[in-house]
Length: 150
Image 1: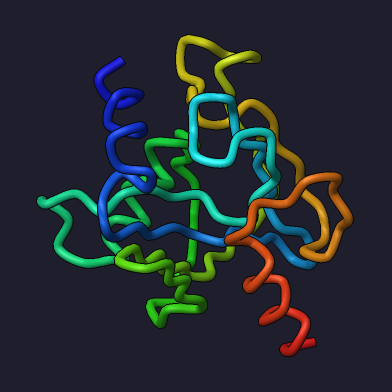
Image 2 (image 1 turned 45 degrees about the vertical axis):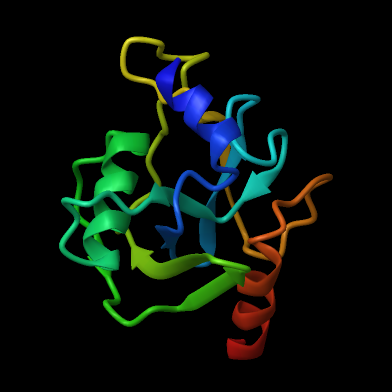
């Protein structure tokens, strides 16, 4: 529960975060955030988290977080240019676009507790502009930017 305590002491778990927006063709990997993270019960297009001191770059942090949270080991092509940068006071979150050749299942704590991630309680492959009931505030600028590219 150390991480949970850190969450309440630092609302963003640090001053920098990074993550991947994962797509397969026209579908994107949406994740539903668990009760244990900032803004729970919201759908997000980004899988990522805090930049750790040992991360060499924002992109390295995004890759590490993606691997930790999804357990994905297949092929992935990541555009190294930041796609979106979200700023809130002293916090910055950088997102990168990543493409996978086929949709994959995501282990969650509820469906595979031995490998699942406590931060994600559900997931879905869907178009980026799908209307979910509650979308994470950091996802809205990504949707706007994706709209501008279509």
